[in-house]
Image (cartoon, rainbow, N blue to C red; front, side):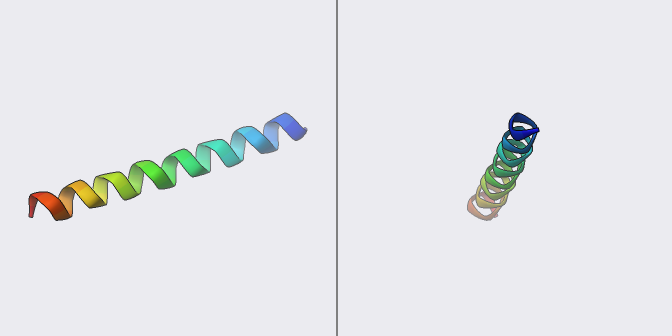
Length: 30
């Protein structure tokens, strides 16, 4: 159960980081 929560948190952090990176690239390109 603990590992599942950590994995979910890791995926959420990765998704947020990836989304922020995409937004940053889009703003830089614009």
